[in-house]
Length: 409
Ligand code: PLP
Image (cartoon, rainbow, N blue to C red; front, side, top):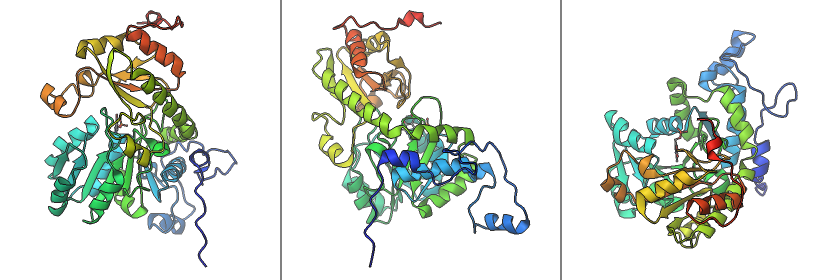
């Protein structure tokens, strides 16, 4: 008789106990094996590893390193994936995915991170790889044409940056699989705590672990998760591109992952509270946050996400200069182009991530001049709200902010 499936452990447990690899000396965490190569007692033992009969540490560039193994077990456990590979950056994971599975054409749905866009628009076509863009997201008719024409990899981000649009992963996967093609999802904004694309039907998930997975703005890393069969070619490319994560960064990322579920709870709750509080503010035209019922994808968010994340986007009345001056007046939000750290960050997409696009192209992508993107950190949400109200020209408390002039120049 078949055994009923054992219940999946919760994310907080998996983040801490996902690593099966144990240290020989009993350390509760895998230490840093800061070594390039591993010795074997004889040729027969070495051949077992080089001929693939046994997986064991061998050479760190190959990813055969105990510190990396331990991290990858946790990453796989969090996405409930058979395998995970860790990379030196999110872009290393994404480019390796495209090189491994994109040779027969890539369809990109919706808005994607600028680095990914330039890879798809410029570098990959130079290698003879066909890339196609469906800016509206999941347009079933247009996608059907591409799949019939032989495209074999469909790639998307959800939620997207910075417009926080959502794409229905299950619907895309259902359509794409009818054509024998693959779906890969960049789930960086959501993390495995808030969204599990593989369970929704995607084949491969990628992350910029530089963001929430690392969570402290102190490491650069990437990850890809999926079945062992689909990840195998990524492993081969990673080996020869030399883009495996270093043991030091793998250890730091493993440590960060232990608190990922806890951090995401706070990011989710704080961003929701700030989004709700700001939506009535007279200086704000609109607030985009998947957890608001006014968000166009709110119903989908409720279905495909278990938390709505720490990112929110605002439109400031008065356009570009007004938005810039709000960003400049904030004290607790650093003006910096990243996300997912313990500290809150703010960017104005038209002056940073999307500055290279023409005004028409930005408009086509829904990027307005008055748009500000906020990464809500782990500070007290009341303090962040006070800072925002103060910068928006409406100081409601006499809370004491650290003086920005105290920062040494
Ligand atoms: N994917 C998303 C959604 C991102 O926001 C970023 C970077 O901002 C990347 C991928 C690239 O990640 P990395 O900077 O780690 O290469």
